[in-house]
Image (cartoon, rainbow, N blue to C red; front, side, top):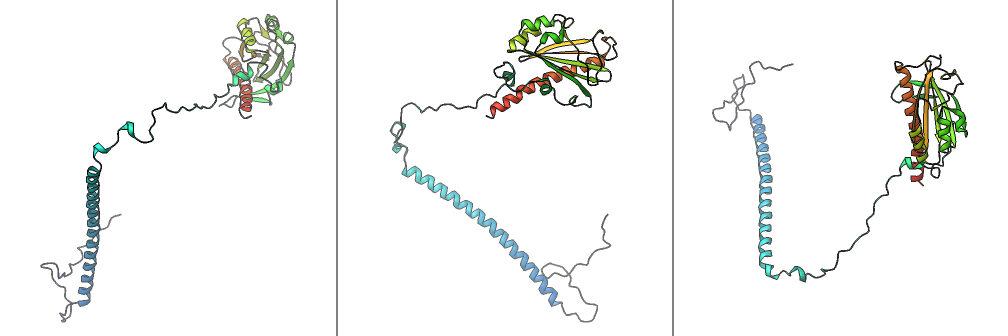
Length: 297
């Protein structure tokens, strides 16, 4: 939208403006409009007063600055005349100054944060309640950041570590004093995984077990039940092993149809990876919970 003018307003006569013309009425009366002249004069007087007031403020600021400079200069002159440099005592004669050693203060710092892994690395510190249902609660697992869900099947908890393992694993667990073995199974779309967690008194024992296991022969027994069919009883399956703290953990993954697993079965490999990561997370969370509780005591 634009605005325009057709022609423009006529100029009014201004007695203070040279060559301006005074307007006249259409009638024969040529008497000046004294009311209009008085109003114009009052308007100009107001503008002048405003200009004078503004100018006065600027002048006041300038005068104030000049006075401040003069005061500072006077103080500098007085300081120089009243306090000659020769009259200032040397550093060795300043009253109250001491030449002894500076006072020392004991340094303080916050204690380092508690390491969650310390609480799951030995039986003496890992004292929270433990069990298959405690370590693997709920009825399903959802992979973080996805909509992938694995339904939980049966759980098992035993002190006979050799009874739920196969190949050379029973001997390895027994030689390293395994005290407990927990199992839980999960399934999705015809693929099932059993997780096994062996418990030891120290992290060194769990680490040794991990180094001795051959996942081709030393495996855990799959656990069926609660909606999960038998799997990995005769077919070729994928087996993994690892350790964290005083826990050695294992997985075995295969098809509930009994089909052998091959390297082309990437979906089954993904299930194994996801549930192995989940097991590590659950063990680590156990340490974090106990570390947090100890820090708040």
